[in-house]
Length: 185
Image (cartoon, rainbow, N blue to C red; front, side, top):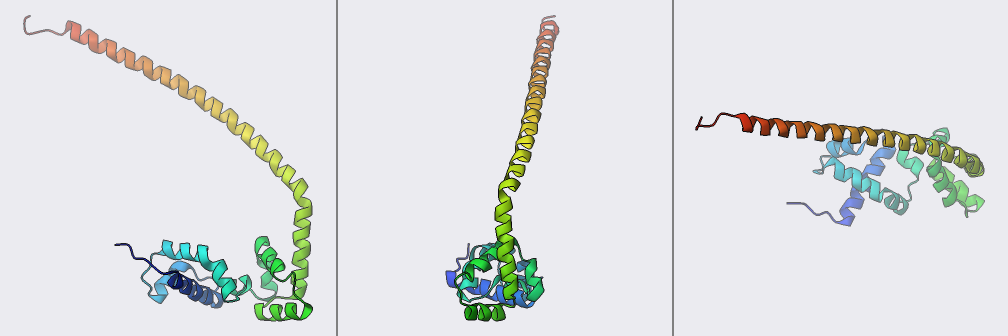
């Protein structure tokens, strides 16, 4: 019988995992489940973490850096999307609030300013970068279309050969029946 878990139970699992991961950044969900003795499949644990970690992290006021155990210069190793989340989160903060946020989350205000510039640079170069990607995707699409046409031709030839072979087998079976000795002979 399938066990049903409450949303509160799922959130508590994710909170416990995120807090453990903040102390040990290499911790996986599978290892967390095994070491904590929770009777739960790994796939379910990964699913809960994927679905609920952002919500839970916001509820307990835990930054991405804290979850990943990144402090100071290590915080610069975050993905661009995680940096953007932090920049967006602190966008309306006063200097005092920003300072408190940085102290509690183990990052530097200068890093946040650098991330703003990095994000702006990414957005600005996006237009030429997008065209390059678009051109490469068009070329790849064209190559794949040619390959598909070639494979369709080969498949058509093989189907014709198979039909011819099946017809020959039928003729041989009919020939065999025609000249097979009967009991009357």
